Length: 411
Image (cartoon, one colour):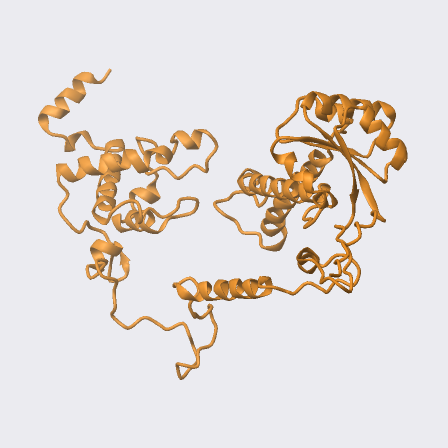
């Protein structure tokens, strides 16, 4: 019977990444790392299953540059965010909004702060990946089978071959003297016994594709899975199609559906929104035959005046003051002063004028149509008339009892 010759031992590694020393206690690893630093080794690293206090200092780890990268990204986001808003508001498209200056920098602070944080975080992530050399799909230390114990029970110290003091024999002796239970040369590639004519190549060689004359690894199912994932992502984009990504026309974009190619269609004549009918021009617009109304659309009672005083004190008194002289609280703090209700022009203005100003705004005053209902607007106008009357009333118009009280109170 012919004996099958045993495969020859694996050849020694031709390219050495470094030496990996194994320790069975964190104290020994800490002492070995400190000894390696004092010996002059600088290309060193340690691997432990849990954090070991003082190990970074023993390895001579320097302060990371990640903080400077984050600072640069945050400053870029801060300056870029502010410049984007300043350029668009001051140079490219200046718009007068309520009399404010174009460079309204307090309004720019929110976006500036958000972009500062955003670019700072992105710089931290990208800088961390770059400084750590990631993504890296394989590391030479993975070629050592015992290295998997670094995540469970054992402690390892690696001295890389690119260290200026590295010498295979002398560094091995140094690590053994430092208390290492085992020292392994780390190859760049996994070493698999070469195939012999009498024996087929081992399964590991076929699977990993290492060693001389080893066949190239088969692509396997990875490309197929990646292609399937891409198809699923594309399909998910079209499964739940909502109104946000359906077909639509941009403003002033022509539409071949209509004969005149205008996509923006005029409203149907006589159509009004449901619940917002404006059939009563006097009540809803404050006009009669297109001119400001001279009268109120409903009777003014004591209840209407009380309602108007309540609404006036809530919405109007901050600017116009409680007496209507235009010296309200925010005017005293620098806002544009409105005209007094007691000047001749406004005393002679029709009530429809005040209703239209409340509805549509005037000058620095914006519209209150979305805050105050139609009936409440008329109630405020009625109370404004009462304020005007109070500042220029004739004592003869008062009832006898009230006139007598006023005369007794006069100095």
